[in-house]
Image (tube, rainbow, N blue to C red; front, side, top):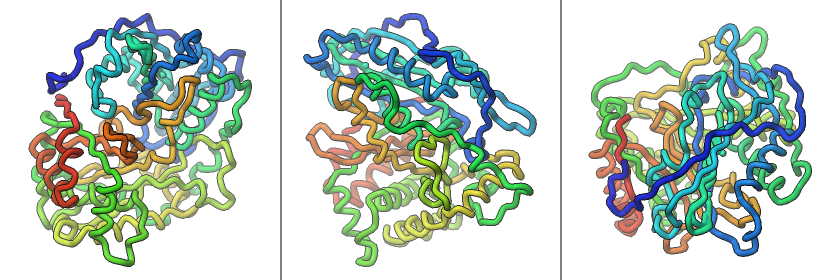
Length: 472
C-alpha cells in the first residue's frame, strides 16, 4: 500500500496474459548457460519501468501493437528468451529453446502522468498494478524468461505489461530473468527491441551466445580470494534482516551539487575518482551509520564489475550473457564510520581493479565447487551502475522515456542491493537516483546522515522522495 495520501488512486483494466512467440520459427535446442550465469545470486527476476508521454506525431500508431510486434521480431534473434529454464544434475541450469514465447499483458489505467506529480521515480505508487505478477511466473524454471505489461495511461505505458494511460501516454513494465543476461546484455536486447519498433529488420549488433567462454575449468580450482562468497554467521544486532517486517523503500537523488559536496570531502589524490566510487562510498558509510552496526563487526560493500574488457581475448561483440563479478570491500563498521569518506572511496577504487580474467575463471570454478552458493548477505550491500545502459534513451518511436530504469531496489531476496540510475529531477537537473530499502527508523537516520554529508544542501532531495511501506 502507498503510505502517502497524495498518490493518485487509479484502477488498471488488464487483458488476459498472452504469450508472444518469435515472428518466424526458431531453432529448438537446449543451450548451456555459463557458470557465471548460473549462480544463486542471479536466480531472480529484475523489474524495470519505462514511462512515455504522448507524441502527436505517433497519433495514428497503437503503441501496444508496435511494441508487441517488435518484441516478436526481436525474439527471432534472441530466441532463447522465448524458451524456458530447466535444471539438470548438480543444480545446473540450461535453456530449453521451446519457442513458447514471452509473457505479455495489455492494460488500460484511468490516470494521467500529470497525476503522478513528481512520483516518476521509485517507489512507484501501486507498482503491483503496473507490473502484474502472473501466477507462477516468479519461479525460475519452467516459466517465461521475459514478462511484459503495457499500461496505457490516458496518454502514456514487458513479464511485460504495457499500460495505456488516460492522457495518451503509456508505461512499459517488464521483468527479465537475470540468469539470462546482465545489464549490458539487457541494454543490447532493448536496443534491438526499439530498433524493430522503429522499422529495422535486423539488429545493429547481432546477439552472440558463446556461454562456453565462461564455463568452469577442468578441473575447477579457486585461485583468488572471494570475500563476496564467505560464510558469515548472522547476529541479532547489526543484521538488516532482523527487522524486515518494517522496511521502507525510498529514492535518493544525487545531482551536481550533491556530487560536488562529496568530492569536496575526499583528499586531493582522490579528486579525480569516478562519480560511481563517490556515491558508493557515501551510501556505504551513511547506511552503516544508520543501521548502528557494532564497531567491531565486519561490513562489506559489493560492487558489480563488468568484466567484458578484462578478458583476453575480449568477449565477442554481441555477447549478452552475464559477464559480471561482485568483488567485496570489507572493513569494520568502526573503521568505516570513524574515518573520512575518502577511506571508503579508496577501498572501492582498489576493489574494482581486483577483477581480472583469472578472477572471473576463479568465480566460475567456485560456483561448481561450492554448489552455486549465494553471495554473503550479512551486514552487506551491493551497488550496481546502470547509468551506462541509457534505458531512458530507449525509443520505440515515442521519443525518450520520462523515466527508464529499475522499478525498485533489491535483487531478489537480497533487498540490500541498490542501483545507480540516470534521472532528471522535477527541477530539470540531471543526476543519478538510487532506490534503497532500509528499516523505517534506520531510513530516517540515513537521510540525516546524507544531509550532514551534503552540508544540508540536499534537504529538498532527501526529505521529499516518497516512501512505501512493505511487509516483507
